[in-house]
Length: 290
Image (cartoon, rainbow, N blue to C red; front, side, top):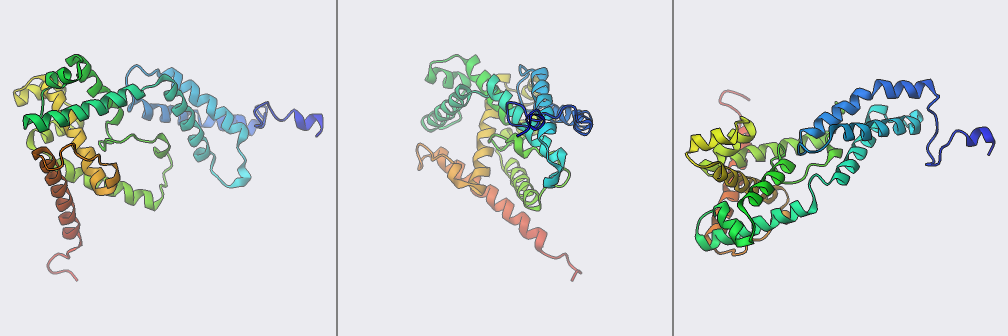
């Protein structure tokens, strides 16, 4: 290989083409793409995550994408760059550990403790009861609930959202549209079938974006109780969607024959029935139509 040819490559194996005006133009033209992806990401992570760090990671990925881009492959640069930018931002998030394993593990511990206490008490436990059973403070329970809620918020499916799925492309695949619509339909049905107080908290906190203090005043309870109701609702919504769309993700109840398990199963059945009824009503022709 000639010296000229060798000079076109850097140590990473990607083309060293920053002097190419076309590639410089791609970087300048798509800097707003980085800002867009960073802005989307910031709505889904805790406030302590640095926007500047994500922006820097995204811009670095954009430059590398421009160097490595091969137009002959027929992939639009916007799509190619978006994939690399999201990957770099996800790597950055993993480094800052915005939803750490400890948060997830503690969240599972809290779910298990709430389930066990509900079985023994015959009602949803208070946060101070959960804290006492785990030997931690009420503040730790509430803070962890908040961390898990922020990690899952807006998907409301109780599952982590893959940044690779947050496409900027204006032409999503038909299969993705169908799957997304199906999930939204189940989500609407699952919210509608929640017990009244849980439904009110979900609608007011996530959809109306009302402060927790206002919701507490409306319901005549403490903010701590609203936080507990929110956590309980998210678990039910997650399990309801998983029950309908991927039953293997639903953890078996500690006491399958207990009252709490029966109420949960009845809720799943009500969501499925509402969803089925909605689909039938859509398919039945209106009177006077062909």
